[in-house]
Image (cartoon, rainbow, N blue to C red):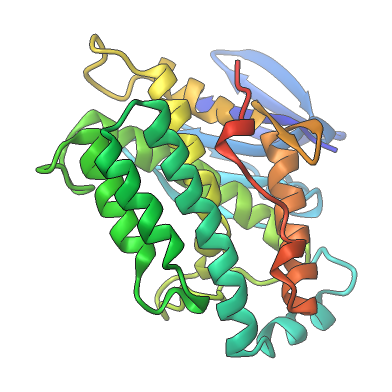
Length: 300
């Protein structure tokens, strides 16, 4: 199983050499075994990649993320049809009932909300706001028809960054979160495809213009963990999303978390979460969903 995320910054040329990626930059060559890699993040405007390498990435279920001029992920290359029973699994996915999806969405979004509450507590947010979030979570219903998730998010972000804060603000913390969330989304999408599902068919997200509805569903519990991770990285001296900060944010995938009493990498936790989701929704039993808990996030 791979474990490494490769970050390419203006590499000259990437190609396949035997079972390795050959990276050529300034006439120097670096070789990385494909078996070590789970994802490649490419940025800059001076990198070329061979079609033979793209084919090898697909066969080895290695995600390729392309970043724009602002260093934010803007494209994702995923494998196609590598799961051995992909048709069977996609047919089952297309037949998930509304009640199945609503039941699992309640369980998924509750994990996110509880993790937001834990992070707010960690930061010492005022008790009245903690109590408000706790009360909103207690009113969560199947399918979250009353949008408790949205209300908790409002209290959460206001508590962390002030009442005037919005996720559209042109500030470093938003750039960092956008970058971090995109890394999570890309990794979850890679795992979804590797398990024979399609990313377009979600349980809650169902935007016809979104190719990653299911990834947007299943990444939710991990968002507050990324918020916590970014909080450990940034300080008052940081004014922009530097190369150093981007590398540290990407390293989130290699951090460790306790899952069912065992210490695993975040990538492994995502694998187990997606696999448990498949079992839980097919069984219509949300208790089978693996618990992703901020309080069990170890990090460096």
